[in-house]
Image (spheres, one colour):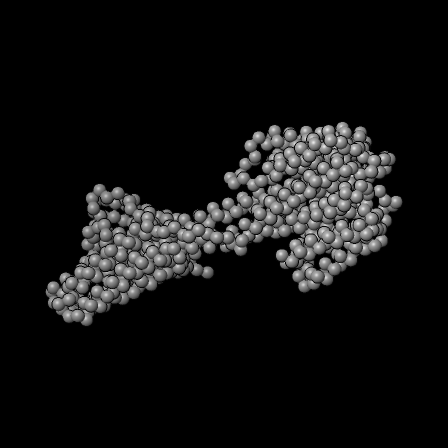
Length: 621
């Protein structure tokens, strides 16, 4: 049953029970007054035109207070017990906590005080006094609990992305410190060595370049290992405390409602209303045992169990509730059937097939028959029928209340687990992204710096003045890689494909690889361009690290409904397998994210890597 529908069904049952009322009245003039008391609660629960509730909450509460206590003024002890609970529920919903609970306590005190002034609705006083407080509390808790918990469950669903985002940010923060303490530190050392080579003269140039190359290779190794060395994020807290509040609030309200009903059951048997069967020691002790057992069974049925599933042996405990609900009926009549609310709520909770609603309705509908068979202190057929309607609607509302609060308790717990699982998935995805970007984005830059350090040393040995230019370029690349490292732990870096093609040409030429580039002018969206640029980086890194290529062809074209990026080189070792290592796996993952594919072809000394993405992704509007 949908959450809002459940709240309306509960209020509908309460309305019918208050219109029927279980106490005798000379006529039904109180009916319109009762209906008026339900107008504002139904309006609030509907969620429609909520503006006045936000602008004038106290004015509306005063209106509810006026119609509530007008009933006492007009009908005195013939007013309907429990209607005041609607005011209590609205106070709990509208007023901020903890003030709402203080005001609720004052209203509870006012409830019993007003009844003592106008006269309790029936005798004996101890039973009647508890009943009016019980009715006030149950209606208040029902209206507040079902409405607020439905709202909180909706907030749980809407904040799943918030918790996932918090998990991702926690992972980024945990990773940022690791990146800064390894890669960034080595980049600083690298830059210092290059600056020393540029400023300290020929005597220090070769040594400093060698140390710069070692720092670049160590940083590249750290980037490749980041997937296995990445620290776990710190333990996540709560998102606005919602997932902690909801199950706890549900448990407390369920416990309060269940205990209130249990105490009322005992009073109905041990201090019955006038004309009822008198309890003795022989019946009081079993009644206490029945009440305690039913309360414990109901709390067991309502408890949330991580991982889902029903409580072990639930058919037996449900059967025990069915027996205990009727065990006192032969002696005390329908006054002892209050625990049918627990039985109905448990049936809705434990039986997952549609027949549960048929069983629930049958239990509530059985009350008129039970009343006629053994009415107890109910004299006269008209009042027996009125009381039957009252009792059936009251127990129906109570059953829906017990079921709803218990269901919300479980749902809140299930959503708590689901949100944390979602956060775990988000963290895992983020860890993979960081690892891929560190491997792909940083690997090429660091490998290029290492190659340029070798080239600069070679140029120095030849006395070639271009060595100075290569050292300056090393400093520029170091700053670029440092910027990439920072962006990786903040968000996915946006790469420029044209810049990457130019860098690929430069680094391959530096490594002595003859490079041919075919570039068709293709409009690409930012995400596709960045992903293809990362693919190109990884492919060039693989060529530099794993091949002895002398020629390389890079081709970016569009045709047959797709954009293809092909990198072909002649330096593949014979017998190389086409899909090994993290690099190709990263490329395949990136292609899949774009809705495309990756293929490789190895033959002789040639190795061809091709990445395809739908051209629909690549074109801009």
